[in-house]
Picture 1 (cartoon, rainbow, N blue to C red):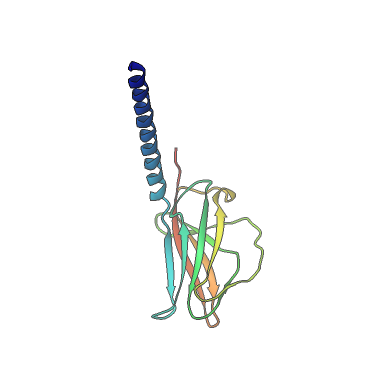
Picture 2: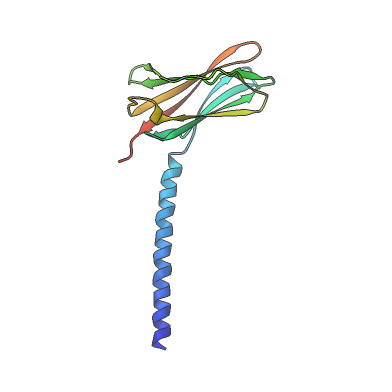
Length: 158
């Protein structure tokens, strides 16, 4: 009888520890989720049409990967290339960051209500500072050209 109670006690302790570990994991997930929000910039074409670019995550860690997505909410196709511009906000104005990379020059087109995503490995960019950045992407419709902007913050976790 004593053995049965002892085994039940051990099972209860084991389940309790497992529950505490799950709660710790949930806390980690909630922290991760809090920095995984996206920021977006929108160019309005008219009252009903717009083009949007979003950066995910809005708070990035040095050496991580960010993804920017272009959404076409117009009635026609839009076109753009793979190049983009990266700016750093120094507290008073935006400064362009020199990107020493080779850009393949395909023309990418997306139709109405389509999206396109492009990734950026931050470790490939030299001398990044902590702070606020923005990606600028030029797109063209049949009649005009637009610059899309979306911002993110670069942090370092110790």
